[in-house]
Image 1 (cartoon, helix red, strand yellow):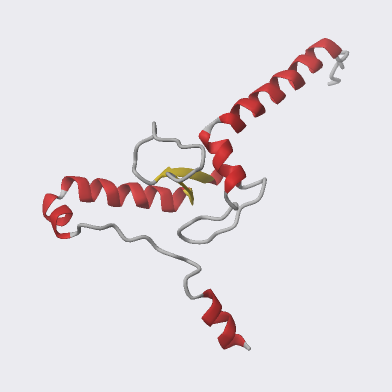
Image 2 (cartoon, one colour):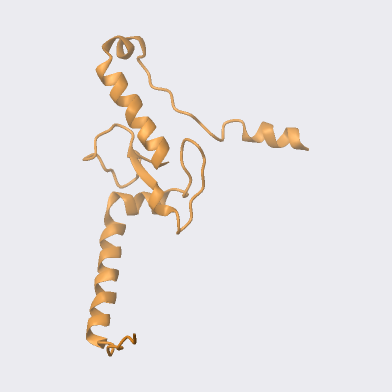
Length: 125
């Protein structure tokens, strides 16, 4: 069985490239695109690092859980991997529906993965 090669349609290829560039610009204007430019590609909880191949697994979490609150300085965003993002929303839902727990915990704590980094590095010397 032989496959027939169809000639390349230059106009169609040009349109595909134009559309891809326009879509990239739209994504970069979105809060996700802005957050990816503002912050290093590292999960804010587990400290997993991401590259261009795995970037789809890095999400933008809204700290106040309001997806309409998107200040351009990124103060309501943090980058989380899929797993940590799911965990964060699970904790939020649990707290929201368990009124006893919500009353007992007036402040939410967050993990700081780099808090003891200096002391850990000093101990390795």
